[in-house]
Length: 430
Ligand code: EPZ
Image 1 (cartoon, rainbow, N blue to C red):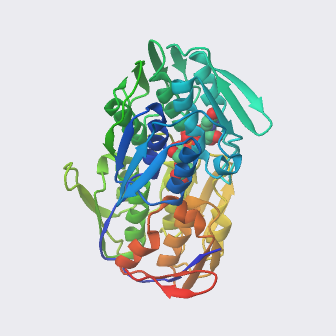
Image 2 (cartoon, helix red, strand yellow):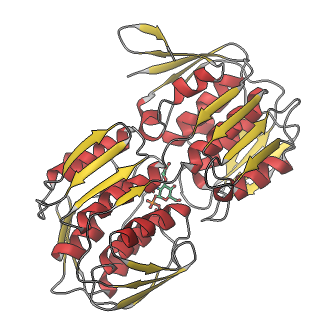
């Protein structure tokens, strides 16, 4: 188990590049299965979840090769297969092979995409949507076999705007016969990116980014070249790091239009920032909080609401607010496990009815804490950066899943941070 050692209290100053978005590149990699051609995906972040997704694709005979941050995927030999359940079970996003394999081969086998530390994460919405197109779902001992004689268009109404169910439906419907209209679709920017990639392959998707998406099925999809959008959750995480540690943090490539809810919250908390939305050269710059942030009342929601993936990081910042804040989590049922870890650093938080009531304190103190999941791990690092004294964050593997060189980028900004592997201690050299 690797860990991060942080000597807190340092001001953060400088510029870091925002990497490609984890939650956009994972569905895009899956969508490459829709073609027997070659795809070139650019701005791919080097993340453990990307490596796992590539191993899933290789189980399906995709040949992948890296050139710097570009991935070349040769899908000419793809055939439906039952990927190793051990690999499928490592990331929830492996369930995104369902839509493309069903669209292309009219069959797919996925693992038991079950719970993780933040919630039960069932697949019922995915299955209900695909059944409208003519699919049948067969539960297996450890997963599901989904098949169809033929896939036809239809009207799909999602009971909840599930991101993954929207993505699987878009991919399957792209090769169905006829038109599909998806109502109550997820409107996240990552959906827009996926639709952009499928349209670059020859797909006919319109309305992505809204809650009604229309997909005209086509006979086949070709290879394509596509550049992944910047990661809006990495952006938000660094914005909060800058807000909590003082100084000026410049996020090159960040897109303000993807982060309105968070920027509005920062404004209400008294945090100053500027941004430029020009396609070439977009950035967001946060000016560190001279005093303590103002308290907030936030409820997480589907996009464009406040993102659940920023909830733990915001809780870390509000632990230092001047007064009482409340954060209600309405997307996942178990996303407050980090609270006990924050309390080890002096935070004063109570959780009731999936809401965290946070009484801000003047200072957090260092301690040894655990990353209980990807975003919780990032929150613990933020708390350690702002705390007095030394913090050790354990189970850093969680953070590696979703942040490219997180500690290295923080070190570039002046953070006093070390990565400790089990056998040696090393100062990050950047
Ligand atoms: C995506 O997960 C993201 N992951 C998550 O980011 C993100 O938190 C989530 O969307 C919500 O924005 C990727 O894109 C790889 P959902 P997904 O289907 O698609 C319930 C991170 O930290 N639900 O929108 O799995 C589900 O249990 C990760 O980067 C059903 O009940 O999310 C959850 O409570 C964490 N039945 C809610 O809907 C279903 O069939 C939202 O799930 C599907 C989902």
